Length: 81
Image (cartoon, rainbow, N blue to C red; front, side, top):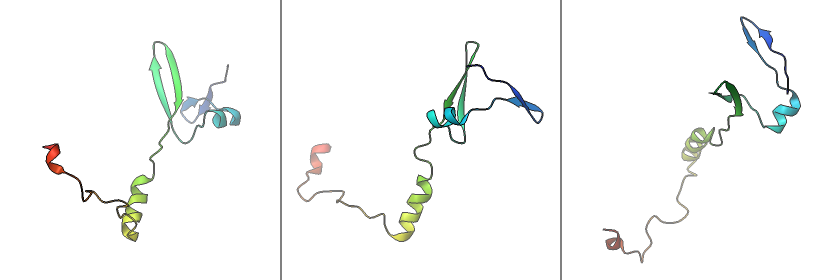
């Protein structure tokens, strides 16, 4: 696919069409890989983005309780030594 390089301030860049952005799920950032004379642009997925704040909110609300016990009543911890 041939695309034009455009001037952006003192730099240059390329534009992605809406179709490409949606098809490849491109968000705010991409991973730029320079490899053997090629430039590879990959969508950068951050599946855990926002988890830290969510966990802090859970703790503040008291929602971070264990659903099952750490140790079961019939568990033999000596087996693991």
